[in-house]
Length: 246
Length: 246
Image 1 (cartoon, rainbow over the protein chains, first blue to last red):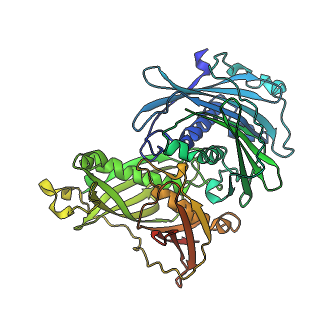
Image 2 (cartoon, chains in turn yellow, brown):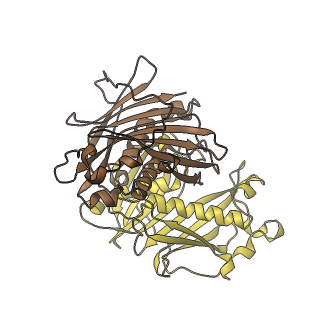
């Protein structure tokens, strides 16, 4: 089963850390997406391969839970594999491990394959030649799924105008950039109070584009998570997120 | 003389590009700083080595001029070397080259070595054992020095509160993050009008910290550069910058 699992080694390079020398969430997040892309590409269903059929992968959900962040100079390996295939979605899991086999953290992601023209999801159980069913591994990750996000606040806690440096190659705000926006709401707790980010849950509901104003609403939940919703001025929800600090 | 020059190969990885598939200025800039750090470390005057004497390197000026940005999947090499040593400053140069020997661009940087306690500059011509004089290469780069920046505007064009994701391991806003802030002022020209960033000049005048409000003032200069000054609310100048689009 292990041949289903892609393994990508990294080192925490200078200028990829946060103020405390921990790998930044931006680098971690983009490395997860890059490894997903590399792994899918090596198995025949990467960006270029699905693009040949005018399809594209869209990230729908991402949960990352870190016991510990690797720090400056530390080696870590991103392991990733396809876990389940549903009609409209597929689950991709990640383990972030140290060289001694110990675990820094895990991640769980949900993706849809869409038709580029119609923007409609492709039926993943009905792809030609069985699709990528043989890539599936049964290995699980020991983190729970995303909780619900219910925002009561009616006043945004901050606002941000989507700008050039937020965009990725698709021309919309980078998925991981939203994680930074969410964490920046809790910068004081992280920076001044010595808290660390244990867990981030992201549900991607809509794309946002250059020049659009994003409003960030935040409320604590009953179970100790910080809930965040990023909305456009129209009220359209772009991201629902939850953060757990420790 | 070539043994004085450090060479560091890279590839433009997925999720390190801007909307047009060009290596982002954030990645390029941080790679330049990382290569400077690696090169200095390999020659005995890196961060850890000078820190043992309670000294630290401080970036004072950075000029980057790109004929072309490498794009998704392209290989590039950052070459870097020490070019001159003055009393309070040292020049470090960079060439960003392709595998076929053609040049993507060049960069010029000026650094001071300061005493961590007093924050005063160390005399670089009077370091023990001749300091790092033997690291110097006479190779030049064919880009001009930084011009003057004179801002007349009294109304800021944008403002930004320094946040968690802006900070680097020193606990202040990352030097390259300021380049993003500056370029974001010209996002519309870059994104909608198809212009590209030819050249960025940065003069780092003061550090900024978590929670501080930064005001960005911008004026075109007579010679076609876009001039930008980033100031704190107190009026203290943090960065003077100039940008050339093409």
